Every structure is written in C-alpha cells, then in structure tokens.
Image 1 (cartoon, rainbow, N blue to C red):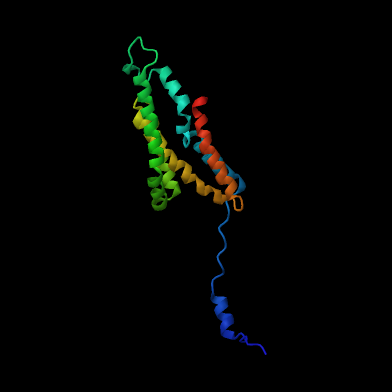
Image 2 (image 1 turned 90 degrees about the vertical axis):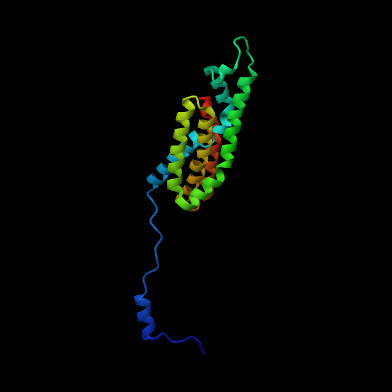
Length: 184
C-alpha cells in the first residue's frame, strides 16, 4: 500500500498557475566577456601594483631632480633627497594597505562598478598631482585608489562559470605585474 496521496484536480491547477522556475540570466557573449576581462586586466596591470615598482621610479625621480632642492651643489649622495623619496614610498605603501577597508566598504555599499569608477578618478587625480611635483599626495592617491580597481575587478571571474579560480589568479598576477610599469 502506498501512502502517497493521489493528485487531485486542484493540485494540477495550482501547479499550472505557478510561475515557471526562473532561468539563469544569459551569459554575455564570449567576445564581450573576454573584452571586459582583458580591459580590467590591462587596467590592473597598469595601476594596482605600481607601489611595488618604486625602486625603478625612485631612480627616474632622482634623474629628473625630484627633491634636489634639499641637496647641496657638491653633494653626489644627498641623504635628504633619499629620505624624502623614502617618505613618499612609505606614505604610498601605508595608503595602499590602509585603503583596503574603505574600498571593501565602498564595494559593499556602492557596488563594484561605482567603486572602480571612483577609484579610477582618484588615481587620475593622483597622477596629475604627482606630475605637478606633489609626490607624496599623488602617490598616496594612486596607491590607495589602486585597491579599488584591483578588488573591484575580482567579481568579473563570475563571467566564466567553472573557471572562477583561474580568472581570479590572472587578476592577482596583473596586480604583481604592476611593478613592471616603471621599467618600461
């Protein structure tokens, strides 16, 4: 004897009136997904890990005469210049790591797209300040905002179901490749 109840006419009509199960949203076309990830990868390569390329940038800044006003004319090894450049690097590293919590909060409250746009604008302002000899403030903005670009792009791994780990690893590699920016 079966303990299953027999379906009644009411069960069939109630099942028919239920909406169909939701279908997963259509994935973007293969070309669009690859284009978006490639652009995010290139942006992350150029911005997110630049703090790690500081030694090459410091050499270039010395060549350009950054903080040379702190040196005497006959001083080849200017310690004041070295200290000023080291201070810029220290501020940049502190901002890179210190910005992680605000970036995480922004991602939670504003979403990835808005966070990435805001941090890209902040990095652009930082680059302008850096170019105008405001090295510490500019580098702080660049390195602090770089987190928003890097972490905000991680969700793009979801565009490739089953390969999320590989895409995330690619973005982590892009972060490390940022150290090569100043070698070019």
